Length: 184
Image 1: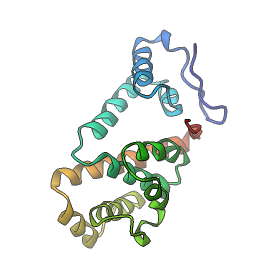
Image 2: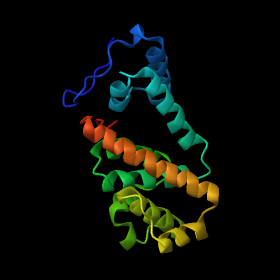
Image 3: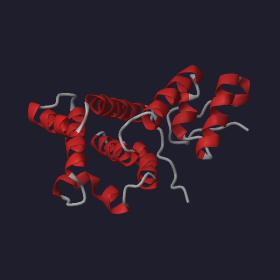
């Protein structure tokens, strides 16, 4: 059975994965992990080696990072908001909750500065993520706040997450990849 992208995406999903062993393997791996293939995977599936490389990098960011998963997801959501990525928000809202972020915290991410739900460490990460996601330049005061709360390794990991999701947001917007339907 062929996977197809959303009709509103600029590109359809990749053709039948059985025609390419790399793509077939990637789709099987994604289904085993998520239960279904996401719209972004279907579109990137047109370049199976790229999909494989992206999956390896994304898996390393998620699973090999020293940063807590709920913090990673809060940062991803804030980057998605700043970059107006409905797609990334549709994917990462449920992941954030599944990783331990409260639904209230997820709902408050856009106004984190005014919310008592976020601790000092989260505020440092979110302040850094906002500046890095908006243009890449982070002021010295924000970086000093980050350094007080995070190790060099954690700062590199946080920066990698921000950069990756800025890129993803632009990728999905350029190709108009439709947001994922809500999973029940």
